[in-house]
Image (cartoon, rainbow, N blue to C red):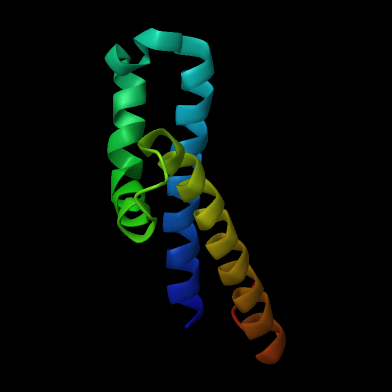
Length: 98
């Protein structure tokens, strides 16, 4: 179970960093960000998560707000997984948690 939680945490961490990188490039690259190869790469990495959030959010949510909603939703899920991991480690007496 600990390995599964570690794997989920890693996938969430990668997606969160991709979305954070997109936000930084949004500010730095400005309107030419769509032609930026690094921005496109970060979009590819985060696309499965943003598509999932787009499907579960109402139509009133603008497409430009979906990455922000995705980031905060992933951040909440990351925190839940981290707390579950801590609880599992405390419950097992820190066996395998070092």
